Image (cartoon, rainbow, N blue to C red; front, top):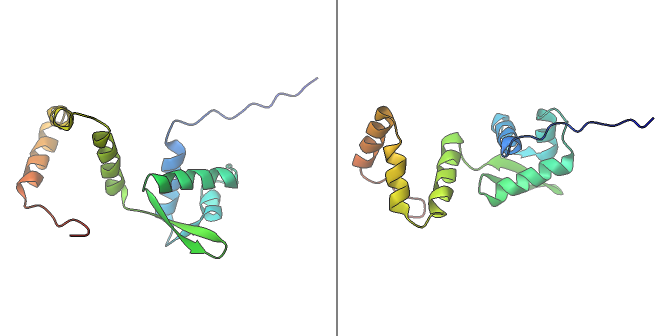
Length: 130
C-alpha cells in the first residue's frame, strides 16, 4: 500500500512575507536567513526563506548587508512605513491618481478623514535627499 503524504495547506498570499518581516523586527539587529528560519519554527526550507527575503528586497521592504559569505537582513522601515510603501505601489499602478485618491478618501471613516485632513494641513516634511 502506498503511503500518501499530505501537503500542508498553502498559505495566503503575503503570509510568509509578513511572517519573515515580523521575525526580522524581533531581531536586535541584522539577522541571517538561518536565524529567521529558526524564529519561524524551522518548518520552511532555508532556500524558501532566502527566496522570500529576496522578494522582499526587490519590493524595498528589507535591506541586506554582507555578513561573511552570506547576508544579514534588516526591515527597511517600520510597519507604518511598509504599509505606506504598499499604498504608493498601488497608487503608482493606476492611471487616474485623482480618481483613486478621491475614492480612497470617500471610503475613510470620519476619524481617519479628519486625521488625514489635519496631516495635509501641516507644512510638507522634508523628503530624503532634499
